[in-house]
Amino acid sequence: MSPTAAAPSPGSSLAPGYTAMEALYADPRVPKLTGRVKRMSLASPTRKLVKDRRTGLAVPNLSKPWKSYGAAPFTTKQVLPKTRAGQRGMFVTCPLPIMRQKSPRDTALLAARWTLNHHPEGSKITWMASQPVKHGWMLVYRVKYGKHQSRAAVVVMDGGMSKPGLAFVTVPDSQYKQWRDIGRVVAGVRVLG
Image (cartoon, one colour):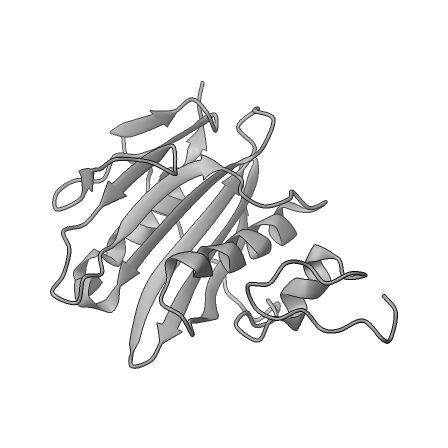
């Protein structure tokens, strides 16, 4: 990277001379993932599954109050009822919407940054858990925006397709009783087959 290259701004396209990871570490919304971030004990996966053939993944079919909803632009989508504030929890899958990196961990970090597009402006991440999963990587994090926050997670997993699959769940604090479902999601994502 040349010393005259400008630092990329959040949400902008990659500045000339920057790699995707350099742009990630220059983004003030995303802190560095250190070894202090703990692992999370994963619950037993659920038996009720949604099969996403485009990603090669099977993901938990969450029980009420979650319900399936029009998936576009994703390949599967489950949502919680809208709150008075107009926000709602969502759980989606899709082929990885960013460039795959050499390591699954780095790919998951970039995917978590990408998910900020689905949170209110000014959102910032705080890491809660990070660990490898079979065929990929999982991150759980808090997203703060103003006086509110959401809990969120991404699982990036190679389902044998041309691109890895992404499972992303986010639940706002107005629906905090469903935060427990985030653990169910990250424990339940697996490769179809």
